[in-house]
Amino acid sequence: MQDIIRLQQHFAEQLAKEDFSGNPKELYEPIEYILSLGGKRMRPALCLLGAHVVGDYQKAINAALAVEVFHNFSLIHDDIMDEAPLRRGKATVHHKWNTNIAILSGDAMLVKAYEYLSKTEPLGPILKEFNKMALEVCEGQQMDMNFEDRNDVSIDEYLKMIEYKTAVLVGAALKIGALTAGADETEAQKLYDFGRNLGIAFQLKDDWLDVFGDTELVGKQAGGDIIANKKTYLTLKAIELADANLLDELDTLYGNPEISAAEKVKEVSRIYIQTGADKKTLEATEVYYAKALESLQSSNLSSEHKSLLQAFAKNLMDREF
Image 1 (tube, rainbow, N blue to C red):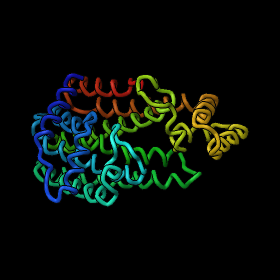
Image 2 (image 1 turned 90 degrees about the vertical axis):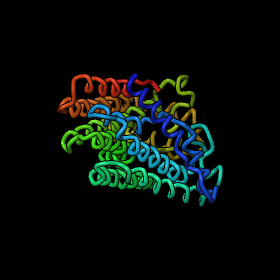
Image 3 (image 1 turned 45 degrees about the horizontal axis):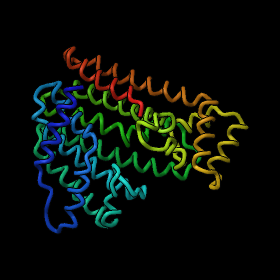
Image 4 (image 1 turned 120 degrees about the horizontal axis):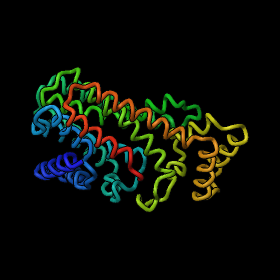
């Protein structure tokens, strides 16, 4: 993990040197603001890592900047759609300014992302991959919003949604980084498949941790997804496995606004355990984690670099919050 930490630090230093100021200030200050909120910078670090395991990670700096700016652009717009008041413990852009400014600043960030991307080589393949990823992220977000009004969401649909909304950006970051360092399409695609499957596994584990993770470590109430009535893998699997009585209980728990949040989380969690949905979710996590490692092992990377990526994946999957 030291290599990952080093790449995260290197990227943070590079991002700090970038100038996002301009006029009118209402357009540019929100950009500086959201990029200053920190976070793990995992996606740009993965872009640098994709280049590192192939050749020179310095060649991927502009690509990593494009990935990070695009990711934060998507967060600004997601927060508007979700009506979220906080991002990383601070006011969201549309709360700190207003919705119109947030939309326009997000649009400007998308342009900035393509500015950085235009400085990368080989531009053609990288642009093709970036465009594919960007469109899929939009498709995933729309799927997620569609699910809010549906009671017939299938597990396959949910998996496709998290693949597009979350996992493709992980895969694309690795692949684009590898392309900048000279990887051919076949090898770069194996890194993409590694990242995409790892991203799905990550989100499934995240679903599980939201309910069963260590609340003292994460510092927040368990069951946020339950309280928000989100259709996670846990919920969909519980519906699939529940008998008629448990289905009635779930309908009551999700349909009665007078039930306290704490009681709702407690009872829905019990049903997850009673149906075995908790174990099935962890099993699905392991399936996608294994797929990620299979793609990695089929690559022509050195044993050292395979071990580096495998250690990163293991660290991600072993987290408790």
